[in-house]
Image (cartoon, rainbow, N blue to C red; front, side):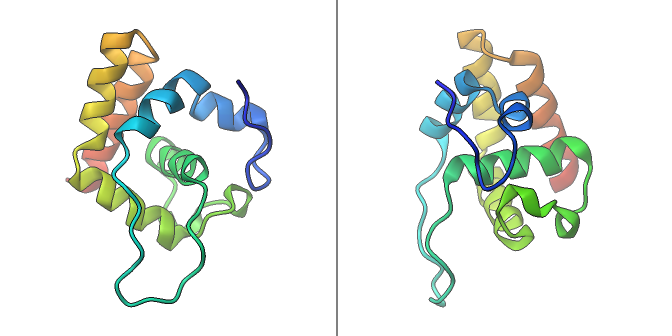
Length: 120
């Protein structure tokens, strides 16, 4: 089931980066969102929008600060979530789940490799 427009990002781009079947796997693996301890900020973002923005940065090689505004997520939020997800070993767990389910195993391998390069 397509989820419609996501903060101005076209369905086509979003669904190429994170197809529905991949999102169904990923959302079950994401660590829970917690408010930042210093307070302030805005309401939590749509997790799929953030996840898609992170996948875009990881796989495109785009610098965090140059994340296109069409994603509707700030570069700081995107970077912060990617860091937390990397620490939780999300990328390897996602790849393993995707390979087992036969859902985008080559793409999740590319995402996991890009995340490893970025954090290494």
